[in-house]
Length: 390
Image (cartoon, rainbow, N blue to C red; front, side):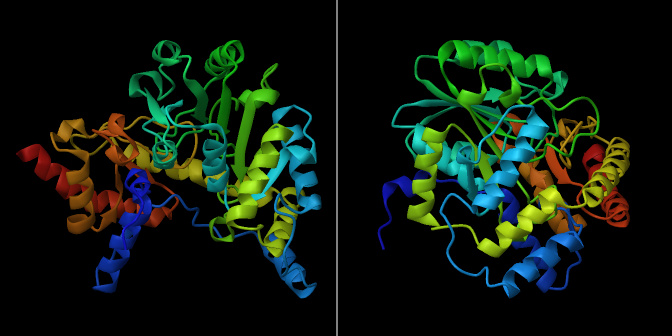
């Protein structure tokens, strides 16, 4: 078949490609340590699974409203109001199968041919992919190691133009683990307010913050009306396979996003949404326990990477990734990632998979056990030592 030309503009997410290759090696008998995929290795908390089972038994297996069940939208509105410090109405909430559709639908609804979108680079690759797909113009803002992987704010202010229709921010950030401080968020908000630009704030890693204070741009004066907040259940509640996310946005945009749901997914599974209510309203101890464990793993991995020749790794303040600088090896990121997989049996991602400004880095997810992280460091050492000898 002859596919439409626009398909050539649609990218992919390298984590799933590397995962597929790693699984293929495992089927051939290799033992692979998975540090490529951004998926908590914890099980979904029991009370959430029980709520889903009860919902299934009660017959929650049919179509629901495209924007989400009213009771979940109410629970999300209450949760967001409490955590971001702004009043939120259920009419501002759209529930989707995973958080990615909020990203996709927002860009589809707001961006036309030639419209510019500012986004972080290195950053989640789907931002740039969807901007290109809809005919928009990606305008990357480098995240630099020397500034803690925060926005280059002076460059940001210079790159905002009359064609800028959307600003994408992500904090805590994938892949770097960087966090936007309040003063940085306020500066971005000031530009957005003055220029009347919408902001897509990807806050999926909000709970994975190890130092400092979380600052949501939605909570700043005047920004509720210009912000699309993206969040979900996959990371915080270890529910990646459940596919449950949401967006909070002005009601007029929520109507358009709900129509995109009608045209694509119809609705999100009802029994999954009822499990989401249990996640928000139930015991939060499993979340706190998981975050504390991830912080411990972060320190273990950062310390271990900094002992490898040719590697320099900053200590990330959020998310569950490290983004070590490997320019000391003198090798391209893609080559190092490939050899880690095939020679050391450690699956990682090239920093360049997250944009041009990710070259010279790797991304490791520490959503794996302490024993596997220690083994991965042992396996990586001979390869990095070989780079140092040449």
